[in-house]
Image 1 (cartoon, helix red, strand yellow):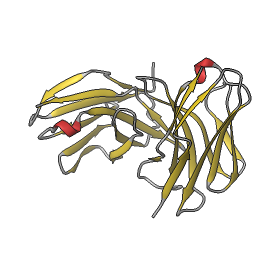
Image 2 (image 1 turned 180 degrees about the horizontal axis):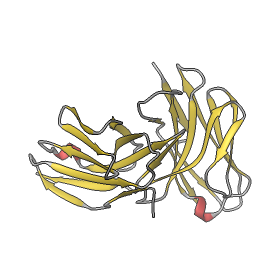
Image 3 (image 1 turned 30 degrees about the vertical axis):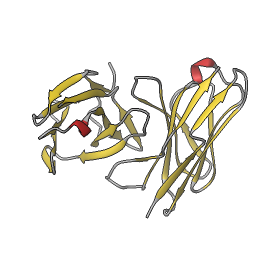
Image 4 (image 1 turned 180 degrees about the vertical axis):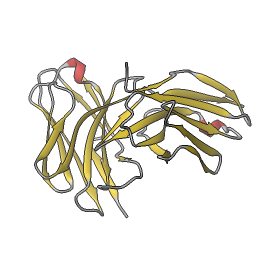
Amino acid sequence: SQTIHQWPATLVQPVGSPLSLECTVEGTSNPNLYWYRQAAGRGLQLLFYSVGIGQISSEVPQNLSASRPQDRQFILSSKKLLLSDSGFYLCAWRKVQATYGYTFGSGTRLTVV
Amino acid sequence: QKEVEQNSGPLSVPEGAIASLNCTYSDRGSQSFFWYRQYSGKSPELIMFIYSNGDKEDGRFTAQLNKASQYVSLLIRDSQPSDSATYLCAAQRAQKLVFGQGTRLTINP
């Protein structure tokens, strides 16, 4: 069966520090991968998605970047965090051409102080 | 205009009653529609998806889609306190899933 791992679960970082969040999927190959952010009390905002190794599409211009160095690994990064980067970061995957929904990881709650 | 819109609530329903959650979408190119449930502090979990006009039933849940009206709904029958959560509607367009802001549902015992 397929599983998605996301870490860390919580993170407190000072303003101006770098960020690296990692997501990996097991039990499938060539998945579509997604990074979402959820601000407190809000819906999910799509940040980046990837349909293959090295292929990254950015949805919202901002202080973040994403990379996909391996087929089942998706990384979200920032060189310098802003207070507005605080939120609940969720990684998700979907089988290509599937009609069923996206499966989410357990999320990382990031607080920038 | 937001691509996917939901009434943010909160929606309060007595235990055992039917909860009705609504969602509209603006992009007629959207192909499939999803309902996710999210408990406080947790990640969303998929409840149902629908891509054809009409109703789709799964246990106590029924999803309804009307593409002409660009309207999606979720009915929860025999509501239980464990159904208290935020319900997220999402529309898929090409490779992307776009979410509404969610409706907070509270089931009162």
